Length: 450
Image (cartoon, rainbow, N blue to C red; front, side, top):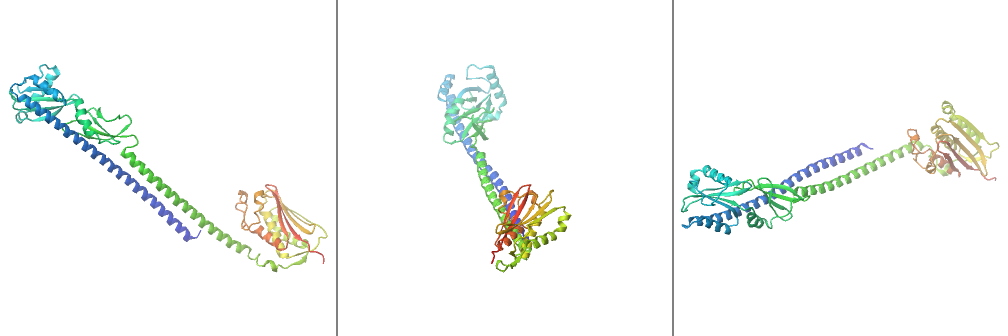
């Protein structure tokens, strides 16, 4: 291959490799960026839903606390009024009232844990909290309670501890607030132990995507976003990335195939150019004479055969060939070009030398075959496969076997033999068996008697 063609091929190959690396890095950056963007959008949606829930909780708490405040300010305040208040306020399932000195107006009976809880809260709260009527949220077991100081009661400041109803929280807030916000996603409220407090659908076949914390109204609770398995934002981004990667790999494959085809084409053209150049250099002197100008002389074949074998006497003897020659007596003369026939015979003898292995035997027989003179050159070499016997007379064709690799030759010797014999009006045939040898027969016509 020419240097310029090699440089072009290497340049295209390097450009393709650079493109592959840059595209891979770019695709990876896109995947990370898209995944981050989708994750941020999902987090924003969950944060908005959490804020909406918390605002709804604070609103219901304010409404319930306001109605309780009115009840305690009634001069006829009795514990039964708290029971009435509870029936109208389903958001709270438990209520406690305690004054600053530790007396409990409601409920009338307390368990030991409830008494300990109220005592701890009363002593924990600062004087400022009592004076300004503050409020806060605390965790009572697995429930959240509102702690607030109510002023204006006939009994002085009262500490109200209102425990939310989980059922009321689901019914009055979670179901109403989260309705229409989910789509194929599922929003679930988790308590401080990670247990789902509310979920619109089953989470068994769902994949956790992210969680956001609530504010003060729901301490230690979280709002979690779930997606069906295989449909999470990350999975969607990865599927898109895999699709883009598949397209890119296909494109790189097409480029690679194109480069390979281009390389083979350029290499084949270069090889053909080299073979043509070698052919012209090797046989130009043999094909100088056109068919119409071959000089025909009445000659006997026997001076010609012996001259060719004499020319090969030294290499035949050096390589240990046993040579047998038989020339039928009284052969008729044939009109031929002696030099051309010598060249044809020399090519056959040379092939016999090249393609013989351990059995080195060469036989040349000349005899009359009807109205032709037959010259047979036989060897006991490697032979020729039947499927290749018809192609060996083509220009540049060489037997494609491991035994022939590395042996000299340009693939034009037998083509030249056929050209010479055809120019004399004759023909050439071959009989061969692999590993047994080959026999080439030149048939030259005998001129008719005048």
